Image 1 (cartoon, rainbow, N blue to C red):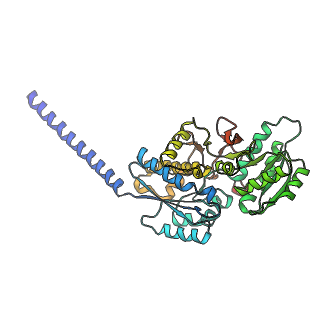
Image 2 (image 1 turned 90 degrees about the horizontal axis):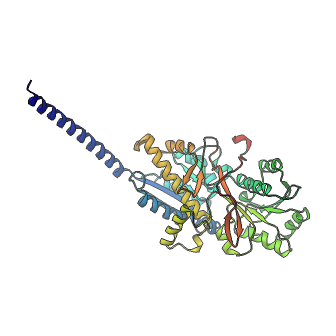
Image 3 (image 1 turned 135 degrees about the vertical axis):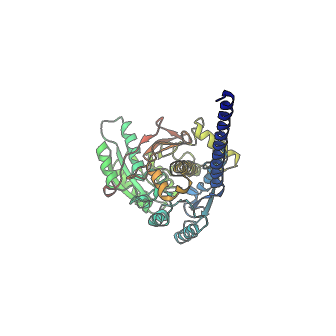
Length: 413
């Protein structure tokens, strides 16, 4: 056959293949575009923005707004799909929170995730999340995340966090005897969350003596009697799980007694507390799962502060839950992207997102803000940091995040 004819036919065959491939690519692109155009992703957050915990958890709302604006614009949403975020205020009232949840799950489209900014509300909804096909990142308490289902903690369990604080004190203790700890905390579920057999056993294991345990009412301002009992037992440190007025009552009472004793708290010793009583908490400790606002040269905090300033956030928003809000949004974003990558758009559902979260390992939110690891058995973060109050700032005591002890109740191990 004439070589010219063969070349012509070969050219024609290649042209047909090119057209076929181009057409196939176009169809695939159009299918993807149609899927992303039609897909709607909604997240609802039911928060205490005007109730008793509003001074602490209220900054979650601006944090969610700021973080999702950043994700939708600078990170192109979830593979091009913008995420709609709705924040609701249940004012700390359980019936209102439950009613808002019922309204949310009947929305069209139904939210893919819901975050209740209250551990009691999260505990009340624990089984509902699984029944209704919702994944939730929740304020962390045992009954909010266990038995393992569709709920994941925002930060480590409170005994886990305190355990890391006790280990830090022990590691830096200079005397030959064991450091002595006195627990003084709110007489509430939140306050008593650190009063567990697992924490007491862990303290004994690492060589920390818990010499006494005291509780006080959430509205109680004079706790001299409790403090005197702990001072009589020669406590070197006090340990609490309380917020706002709680740590203030402890420190004020101790100062009036002339007792300069450091206080170890979990996440609630933050900038909102330091601003309430400047100078009162110098030398005290906090244990949290995110970096500090005061690490201004760290890239993740620098980026957050840039957006914080751009959106005219105020000193009231400068709190640990603002940083936690960013962490949650970034976790949700990463989980949704990974789920779409693995299961396709039709597989973006609660069951697959739950699986994705359970396999999340060392997720580095915003390249430094926090490190999140979950597993099928432990749906709470496994890393934290110890901070010390120095010149009314929270200064990290280690360069990196540390593993926190696993102090789950035995039945959930």
